Image (tube, rainbow, N blue to C red; front, side, top):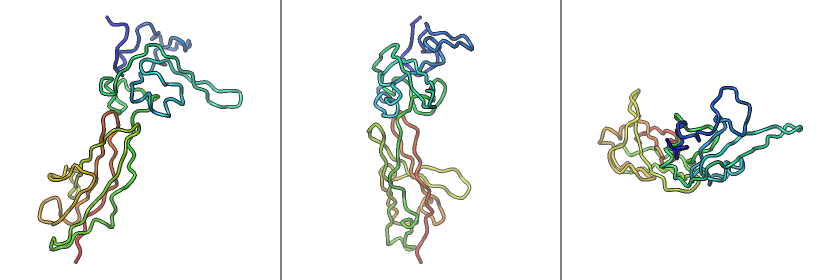
Length: 204
């Protein structure tokens, strides 16, 4: 049996740590163990907590007499593991702790409602644009979706994986006045970011 694993899963926590309920010894308490992958080690918010070394760390906090929070981080097992290999999908699922900040996606430009108008004859194209970035920096992917009435959002079939979505006509099921449009932005190791929704309208 391995003494520790290289994933975010609870089963990978170093075996020498105590799993006794109510253990007050923070220097060996399993509940204070967190896994930091290479992506997370580059996050400013994690580094500010002292979580700078990839691998297994012990982390806890305490309050000063002035009420300030202080962070204590101790590297237990340094390991250079990518977010993908660590199983860190940024979903806060089983084994993914809530202490170590995952990669994040920020949408800087939202598609504008005023831009979602297309000529009723299809002669005037309109374009929806979204801009987004991952922190730490990494390529992101885009997937435009549409929604008809109370139905769930569905991926737009064609030309829908770029930061822009051009609608040149209203002849397909997707491009009908009243439908909602949005963009889902993704990257490995982060929770998907979803843009604001806009409603397609037709000019007279």
